[in-house]
Length: 353
Image 1 (cartoon, rainbow, N blue to C red):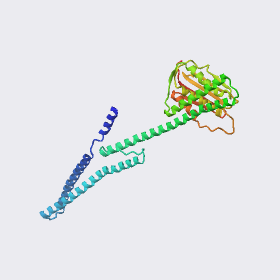
Image 2: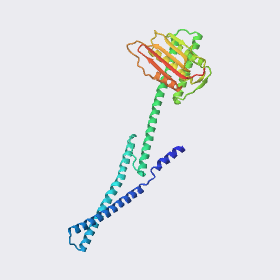
Image 3: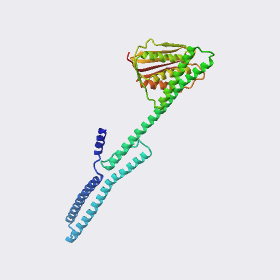
Image 4: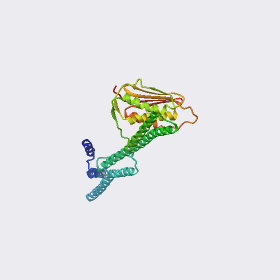
């Protein structure tokens, strides 16, 4: 804050020269030029007249010579005044014309034309005014861009979380429909599906709270990261095992610990499952591998794509949501896609093995 104020003072020092002093200086300089011009012109004219009289040997009286000298004096005086007025008005006019540039700058502000910049000329109050108008324009432009960026981020967050809320909600409806269609359920099956329903309900509640809370994260230290991955992979498999052949590998996943937001990780697996249901070929296996890569936690999922005449329209929100979560951990989400195959590699934070 102190440095900012000092910088402001330094900028202001550039324009300490007063406009009134500047105009007074112009007046003094032009007056001096006019006086010198008057004296030089008067002296030159007198010498010229005397030289002409002597050369031509004209017979003129002393009174006539005095009249001629007074005439020369008057003409020289009027010439000096004319020169003074021309120079003074020209130089002052340049300063006053600068007001027109400032008016244009103010009008550009009114029209929200933040790119317009007033040229800085001179070192007076008008220059200072132009400087601060330019500064205000830049600050306003930065504010508008920041506000626009925040709005875009807010819209993206709402779309992302709304999409992620829909994913567990779809699973919830599927479990309910499945239990209704099945004639009889064992106590074990009933407990299993009720646990899944409760889990997805809690997930929807947390995502809704995040939506209302502006997407704030809730990270916590996970001492047994491998066990967490096994749980999330098991949830992912439960959603898909009825319809797909799954190939799951956690052999390369070490024992590790780290700071994680469990709901963020669950969103990754939910979006992977949602994409599989929309685009994966049911007759081909779906693979998922959780491993360590370059000291980071890495999730790789791949599947064959549906070969249908009518392609399912993709909003890309699921992939964008996964990528956003990966970026929160300093990682990336890289998609490899062809008409036949889909693969995504998600790298998350560095892990402590």
